[in-house]
View (cartoon, rainbow, N blue to C red):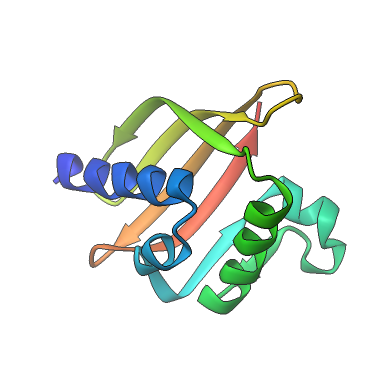
Length: 119
């Protein structure tokens, strides 16, 4: 089971790094939630939490448009029965690398909640 969840995480990174929003969003449940400290800063009214694929599409499209060199380098993937713990390095040209941890909660093969933590 955990290997199957790791494959979802691998597909997540492939879609993100290819900036393929449709592929990325296809991994999420329609009612999924996403939490990020960067959301809290850039969209304070969200308090860091967005809900649904439409909001996620807007959020990530903005990131891809503004940060064309954005790339995530995976350092660790650990899965249990219903979540994947991902550690990666957020890389952007001319910026210091940022160490990130993210948890994907998965139900019925879809991500229902993703939470980002900065190290």
